Image (tube, rainbow, N blue to C red; front, top):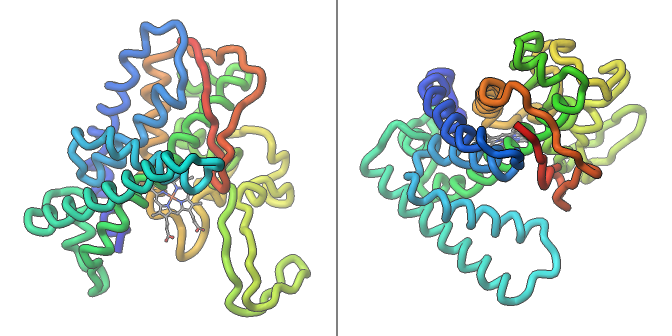
Amino acid sequence: MINAGFTPRALQAAEADVRATAVRLLRPLTGAPEFDVVTDFALPYALTVILRFLGIPDEHHQACLRWSDYKVQLMVGRDHTPEQLREYARGLRAFGEFARELTAQRLSAPRGDLISTMLHESPHGHRLSPDEVASLIPTLIITGHTTLAQALAITVRHQLRSPGGWAALVDGTVAVADLVEEGLRLDCPVVGMYRTTVREATVAGRVLPAGSRVLLLYGAGNHDPGRYPDPGRCLPGRWPTAAHLAFGRGTHYCVGAALARAELRIALEEMAACFPALSAAPEASPAYRPTFPLRALTALRVRP
Ligand code: HEM
């Protein structure tokens, strides 16, 4: 039902707005001696795109960023003080109320956005209830921007660190769409997902009884040397599109995959256009947020 909002037509209609968001965020960075790809571009870009795609007015974007961060902190953080916990709880309640109010508005006055589509379309004769749509809003915001920001940052990092990598992107030797896929395969942001077996299954000669809790390690699958010879090398264009597991597989395949691919392509195109001589600032070693299953760089400093 959510997929109804991610048709090629809806994505095509959003493309100009996504590109304008990228340009608006990148332009002020052109004069800076150095900037952080993660916090100065990738996160605000990914968040703005998903909020606008959902149809959330710009004046609420800062609050949505704060509330999303509270939710991530609660899921992955440790050693919170009671004051922090109270603040997160108040924030998440406000997030829920905000989502319900917005849902009620779009129910009575639909617009051409994802919230309206989820409320008013009934693919296969099913329609989501307003409560279901309201509860999906925070989920879509959080899953839709943290993953994307990471995919973008890590792809830029790989390209800057491979000799001639950035120049190849700028002069078109490397096709942007191929780089997007190879970046996702090489270092996928969601390293795995849990599942429970509903019946006995045999995987690689090992019997998993029904009811087993298993962790599907997409990141490891993407480096399976039986499938990808020399899996640690970034070779855009080597595999057919979507040969990797970065968006999962099957029923729960990422609903935002097509939007994510468009966002990554547009961001890389605009970064290459704005910063033809981009280089990595010296870095001791990449620092990651202590999160699982999301793999997320805390920073990526670069020089225009
Ligand atoms: C590069 C960016 C992204 C990556 C790497 C990514 C990855 C994933 C993965 C691995 C899954 C789980 C599949 C499974 O359970 O097997 C997933 C599910 C999901 N993703 Fe994404 N995602 C990205 C972007 C997005 C965006 C932009 C949105 C929203 C617009 C989104 C919304 C969702 C939702 C709602 C699910 C749950 C689907 C379900 O359980 O049926 N994702 N994503």
